[in-house]
Length: 188
Image 1: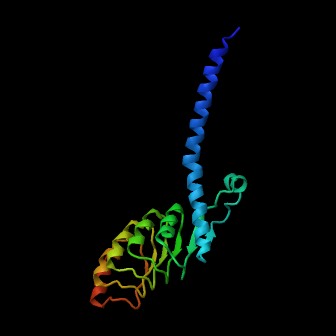
Image 2: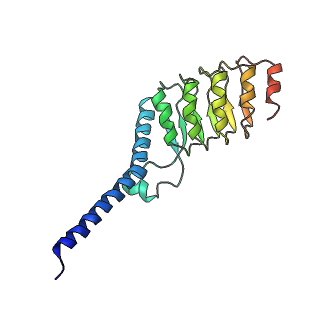
């Protein structure tokens, strides 16, 4: 007959292993998903909208565990932004379009956008963005369109904008940029 204590020892080890695996699952999958859901709630509370990628509703995680599908775009135009909300946008690294136009976004808030590595369109017009915030946009290697009209950028800030490798569309109306300052964009 098998020793009952040995069976308990094995089952205790198995239980500890199972708890460890569950903890890893929750830390790796569920917590980021919870952060994404909190971000969605906050975006909707300030009047923003989220555009989701097509064909993601068939995912088992979306269908049965109520996970958030991949977001393609977020529109927060004229929304009352907080630094916390801008930080939460980092939980959507798959974003390709982000509209922060006519909001209170600041140079410091741009630090949180560096995690949006797929971002292709960024609207920052009529915000408090200055030359000090522009170096933070260099991390957006896929950025194709950048709207900066009505911001406080000057000729010196364009040197940083010129470092964005794929930038093809740039709107600069009503800024402090002069004709000689446009020479800083020759690398584009």
